[in-house]
Amino acid sequence: MRNKLKILFIIFYGLLINDLNSQVIVRGKITTSNNQPISGALITFVDLKDTTYKNATLTDASGNYTLSLLTSIKNNYSLPTDFELEQNYPNPFSTSTSIKYKIKKQADVKITVYDILGREVKKFNLSNQSPGIHGIIWDARNEGGKKLSAGVYFYQMQIDNKSITKKMLVGFNSNISIPNYSVSNFNQLINENLLKGSYQVRIENGSRTSPTIIPKRFENITITKDTVLNYTVDKISPVTTINFVKLKQIIRGYGASSVLLWRPDMTDSEIQSAFGLGEGEIGFSIFRIMVEADSNRWGLYLPSVKKAQSMGATIIASPWYAPTNITEKVNNISRVKYDKYGEYAAHLNAFISFMKRNGVKIYGLSVQNEPDITDNWTSWTPNEMFNFMKNYAHLIKDTYVMAPESFQFRRNMSDPILNDSVACENTDIVCGHIYGGGLATYPLALSKGKEVWMTEYLFGEQNSANNWSWAIKLATNITDVMKADMSAYVWWYIVRYYGPIGDGNVAAQNPNDNYPKKGEVTKKGFVMSQFSKFIRPGFYRVETNISPTLIGDGVDVTAYKDPLTNKVVIVAVNTNSVSEEHTFKIQNSNVNSFTTYTTSSSKNCQKGITVNVVNNTFTYTMEPSSITTFVSN
Picture 1: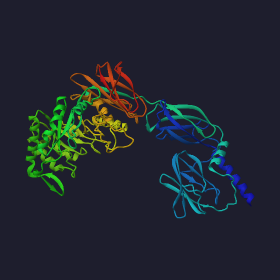
Picture 2: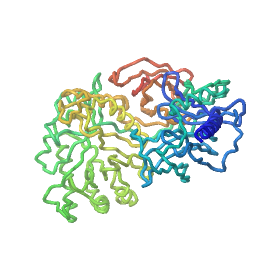
Picture 3: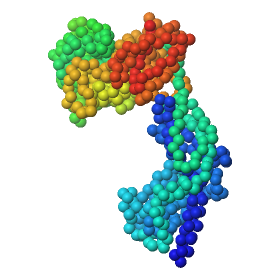
Picture 4: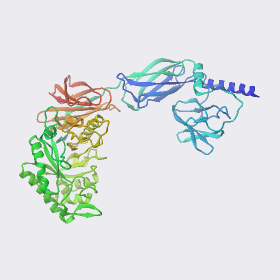
């Protein structure tokens, strides 16, 4: 009896090898010539002995792929109508068993083993399985590698939302001895029995290939056993077309906020670094200050504001708190009393007049900083803000009135204002913040002829401003704000360990970060200078189009023009970890050359080469993870 069972097993095992000898595992990596991994690339192996057999998979985020090839050798099986799960063999078993299954289409397959109580003990996640016959070996161990006790177990095969379940017996003597029966020598035995296969290999773009590539084919690839095949492909080099006569929004500037909310005023040196245009300086053109409820504190702002204004800065102001004599608390939320709106307008006018008497022009005044943050300072509901803008905002004189400056540029606060002719007329600038939302073009505001300003944002506050991963995100964020047709970008504190200029404070120190010294222009500061030093108030953003539109190119471009001088500026951000060649096509401009300035992990707005424009086109290779500004000569 024992010998007969051995013979039966040998026959079965031979059939199993005969089934599986038409399969081989191929793995490898797809990269560009500069070793950038290609994610989401479609790689297809076509069996040249029978071209109806095509096996395909997608590369992962690191460019790697793994594929079980189904050849045309000795495979006369008809595929199931959907999928089939065979009984494991041997069964019962005590050491290892094989589980075979057949599928009609390429799919992700899950095979899960459960104990008799329905508890999961082992799972096989088999991704990108090609049509045909497949098999796995299970050694009766759980996910932790522990041998399971004898008993009844169930194994389930699942594809999409369908499943098949069968029963198996573990730990019983099956009278079949399988010496050294393991996955490793089983695969080795399979590989030794494989015949040669010859394939055509196609590498193409999938629906989310990043970066986009030029499709490529490799002919007559011979595979004799499990093989590693790495391939190099070329990326599609995109072209950004810049049309300098198609003007978008006017640019009022880039800036940040006063530090007087939490420390003494900025020093002359800090003001110089923030608003100066020299080497190592940022070149801010907007300075945001606070309208304090206590008028006795207004004079504290004068030294820094007057110096910044003398250097060309535009001064804007926002109130956090209304004076206590005109506020009340309702449900523990502070608001301006409804019968005191006129007095609140007079309070704002008094601030404007005070600054004017002391030689400071307030360009724009917000009615309230973040009125929708109800637990920190004076709050306003959408209806309250609408009422003030319609019936009282006209009382504010000698400045542009800005509203509603909500926490997330919430349209429910600004739409009612814009849709009412009187309230809209009383609103000069629509402003807001983008904390967790609101970063989008605002068609309604633009249709009403209103400028849209982003007047506060920060991120990376738990890290140093010299942390490059956060600094390059700032470059992308400013670009996105500009592409959302906003006329201004205003950061939070000018001087802070996470801001444009260091304060020497490392209280929130991350031990892996290099925190800035007091007065040091940080990486974030130099990133902002790539915009603020070269795109001055009065420039316009112009139309840019990237063709082809590529997924994962990692390069974003905005461009600007000064209509008075015809000076043009291009800002390109490369977020990839590798260098990127990018082509720029110039339309409707006579510029002949650009000077480059680059900020990266190792450079600080460093002046670079002169790039010549030939036939209205130039190509430039951007450094890995960098921002480059091209300034016309």
